[in-house]
Length: 332
Image (cartoon, helix red, strand yellow):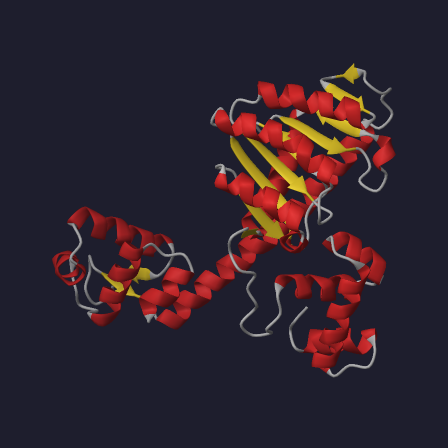
């Protein structure tokens, strides 16, 4: 049981095995641990170092030169506290990176269309954007990271992307794409995503995504100047500060997204999918149904249907009451 639980929380199998051995045989020395775990001496030593680094094992006062295992309850508490602290740091960094990237992108909004300044160019019109994408795809040396929010993608957009993606994959490039969960219900986008995966790319989905972006080799970024106003055009930039901030935002979103082939899971305690949890959070924050639908990349009817089901489950007669009861249950 100890091994299974700690495996979920990130300990290597060898470290788990040595920790379990220490718990079962508090007097065990290095040779005893080798016998119990059937691991080589160097592997046991590395596992012990790992346990000490994580504060799961401490020097024994009764047996100098040996270690004692801390209790599973304390060890679990240490893991959870560290993960919570790490999550808080990552959330703060993500918010700072998003703000920095948005501010930097907005600073270039004054550029005259199709003129470059400090390696940054403002593109206006689909033809200009597609022409730049063709060049960037050809120049790419390692990978392309993309975020495609808004749910179902247009047929024109998918048809324009296929030859570029096919060529990049044939040259051994890595293609990592993030869609919203709602594309799982759109035949055209889902078919394209499956083709991309079968061809060697990687596709993940999430209920909420950062603004649309394309990152080439983590050095060149193509982003909308104003995500809410497509007529403002796109920004193509090699500015290191902007690229680094956008890569950080992308990595945060990618790490929490679900591979296309995996089932969307429900939280074991609340029974909610991540999309339902995010919907509750958006509406609790005062967002309208229309705005929430746009953020989630789904239709207005879908949002209202989900919300009606959530209110019925919570036994709430109003949005306010639903938000209150969801918070009381720890769903928010």
